[in-house]
Length: 368
Image (tube, rainbow, N blue to C red; front, top):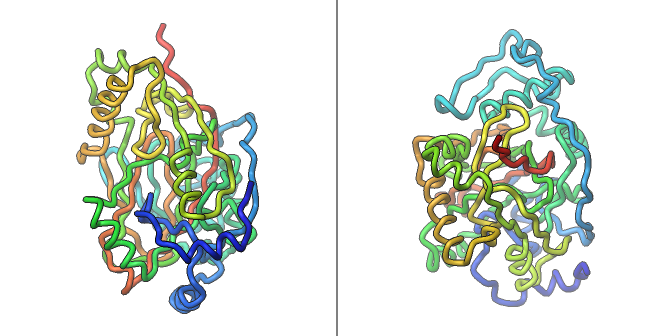
């Protein structure tokens, strides 16, 4: 059952626990904090609100990937004046000269293909798109899949599909966090606990520090390819339980808003990409409860090995540095990512919206 407005207001009257994810606010700001935040942002309508609403578990739906319709040479996307620069040889491309508001359906299909191939696409100078409003942006991402509704975090008022990341002046909270934690890194796939997790995800920067606050991505396809054939075959048939119970329990314990009951889904540890055919490791540090069929110690050992491999493999990672009016679209099937809290939020805010488009149920490996 959804909490009342009074319950949310009272949430500021008790001492908060150490943040589950220091990159996110889980309860509304005080009135004075809200006034200050509005004065420091170009996008006040995108400050987080906690609309009291409720969502049931998303039913199964049929999905057709737009990348499968795309012309592989991408003539509609790469038109005159558009330049592309790779972030690393195997992952990440920065596009300049492209306006998301001007894309035809054919170009949108080709953008989906580029995201599937390069994992991350950074689009610079998207001022017009970022000022186009939440309805346009939500409709844009609905082209790529079914909207996801975040269960606990703030959203744009009237648009619960927007997941708002807003850190402004919360330095005391950050310092408290680091009294107990050694790092802010939380390697995750967005809402992997859904039965049909997001395949295409958009991040739009609304405010960012001049230096710091980068987002780091790890290529879980390349991580799989680095394993020996024997080890690959050992994990190809395994499945893991993904659950949102820990995140929702934290929000409830801190009297924050909850919009969904916890969701559990069982997904293959190795999934097959429907566009490229690549195999990737589908695990993360945030939502995994264990591996099906293994004892607790066996599951913990294997999860630790695979996640350490993914998170410490700097030679198959890419670091995205945020610039004003940038948009990032990335593949949720073949990447893990984490924010970095290395900036002083008293000096500059970090403000991002996320839209996530749910796609197919993860495809398992099938051996002949």
